Image (cartoon, rainbow, N blue to C red; front, side, top):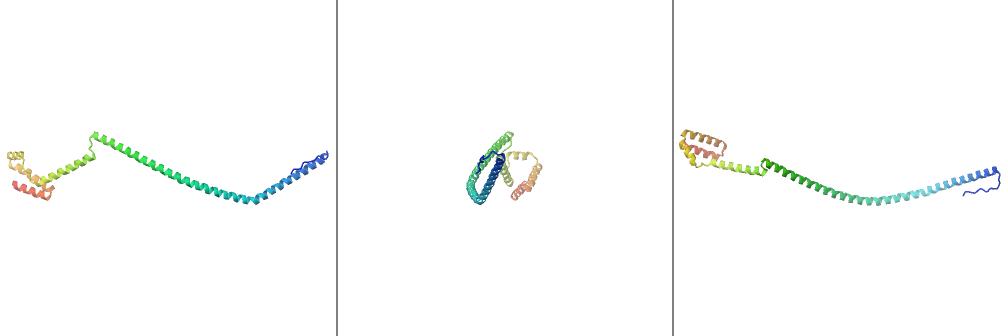
Length: 190
């Protein structure tokens, strides 16, 4: 491509002109090579660009398919881990709550505070006793020997006053059947 200069003469002017013409010819060739490369790139550039685009699409589809599969897999694993952690946290809170309740119950027991079951049992017992008292208030009760001896030694006026007070109290709080029985008892004493 580049031509070598042949030393024909030893004249400095002719050597300079030959060198200048060689540089000029070389620059012209470089310019033409650049224009040729530009034309070739312009012709095949579209083809190369289209080929690169189609390769990019293929690669994108492959990576998208793989990433979607991996994403589903990772999502499943994360879901499983989250479920496991949630179960562990729930179990830990349940254990902590149970320990706390046991310690509070122990402390309350040491202080003498009754449990919920004891309070319910006591309430049921009080209700049963109330029913028994109501039932006794409805029936005339047999007088005990202590009551008989006390009534013999006490004057009659003092025995009637408590009976009247009891009859009044019974008539205000008792059932209709108990009121009727109380009236009979108070009428029998008169």
